[in-house]
Image 1 (spheres, rainbow, N blue to C red):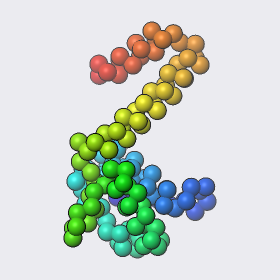
Image 2 (cartoon, rainbow, N blue to C red; image 1 turned 180 degrees about the horizontal axis):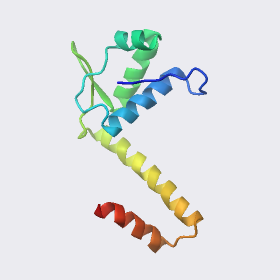
Image 3 (cartoon, rainbow, N blue to C red; image 1 turned 30 degrees about the horizontal axis):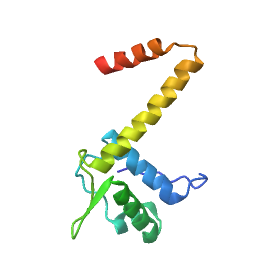
Image 4 (cartoon, helix red, strand yellow; image 1 turned 180 degrees about the vertical axis):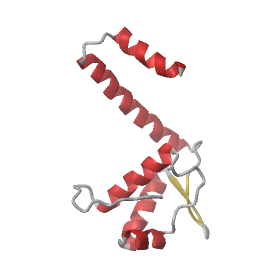
Amino acid sequence: MKIIIKNKSELPIYEQIEQQIREQILSGAVAENEQLPSIRQLARDLKISVITTTRVYNDLTDEGFIISVAGKGYFAAPRGNDLLRERMLCDMEESLEKAVESGRNAGLTDAEIIGALKKFLEE
């Protein structure tokens, strides 16, 4: 799992890490049920506080992106996980909203926008 912390970013470090782990899970770069580094290992690797990595893992667990298995560690949640599915649906809806807005700004009709979407559904 590759995580890059940008010290000049306006986002706090924990949010940068959470965002990157979420993206890697959603993209499949981190496979479902794949074990994540331990809290201490991630803190060592990133040269940050264990408190920060604990917060990251707790937040991602609450959001349904990862699961904690007592005595074994943290794992990427299975794709069938309801919370993860809900998050993926919200992300998709946000992307579609932006696409529709772009189409309308370009002067496309609703029929043309729907036609473009259908092309992707048929692929």
